[in-house]
Length: 501
Image (cartoon, rainbow, N blue to C red; front, side, top):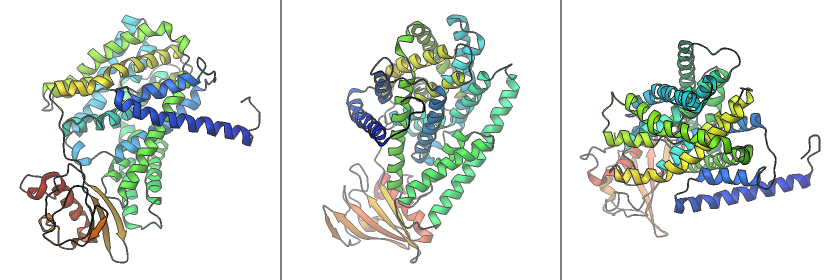
């Protein structure tokens, strides 16, 4: 559409048709990807490239708009990742993830930038920018892969927490390296990063706690309002952190992590809504980034991208993992997998728009190198990660967790818990009386095969059952913890160390 030309209903209809077709094709692509092992981000980028200048012919070169929309998409992706992360799994991994997200990033930036300068021939500013841009693991890629690769909980915790934490220091570094004039001394950068991370953490935890408290104590008139409120609170955490001159990305992740573990009402619906928004953000961001690139201009930057990516993958990432995890009791097999699981995705490409917007000399080359690097090494690392986990004997299947949805009963001062028993749950074969729910909680109804009945203490629960559990306010959390414990450990959950605590 030409500049100044008014937007008519006809133009809007055309735009809606194109967007809907792209979304439908992208949804189908997820199905194709799940069978072929091809990372979905490559398919989405391919859609954007096919629509762009060298494809259908849509011209799009607004790097500033791409950066703004990319940031918005990253906020949604981090929120979805935080909401889906279990605190119990990442808590033991937090120290290792924190070191990997700070010290590990610094090591990776230094080694990658050195290779970019001495091997590829980039000047130091360009080399440092590329080193910083590609040193951040991508939350969308990591969360997506971890859904399909059953790894030990401590490894999953490290990877999830790292991908949620390391965006913050990397963004600060890229902005500093892309600023006009002389770069700040290294000690100033370290101080700035520490301050912004601290502010972001405080803002995120405060807003997350207040949001969770409010949602648990205020009954909204419709269940569909809870997902909207949760996402709004997460976005508020990002904006509050950024406006306070802190890390908005860390703030949104921590706020979402806190809310995701706060036993909010109507949680399955909220989780599904957030997951859908996360997919939409990924699709939109990748397609937009594909539109921004001009494929016929990539030829001269393919070899430099391969060299930088090779150094990043086989030198910088492994060294950063080895140094960062040295104080922690991880096996060499686990460190090997962490080294290979440093997945890149849309985050580096979005960050590569920062020097373009800042008019850094050679910024178009930086963008092209990062784009090629992400494409090639995602194609190599993503599909091979499940194979490597199997070869290293690190796959660890675990029983599916119960699906529990909570609805507050304000006037009765209680809660109604809807519990779904998945196929692999160890609650199968457990009698209702053996659940040993706390006083004040009881199973009032069982739905089995479309038939509802009031259970007896001797009623044996089965896979696929749906339960209605009524609990008073004081024991609501204890009842849910006990239900989840039995789902993981069976009737002997307390003896196996998976009790209600």
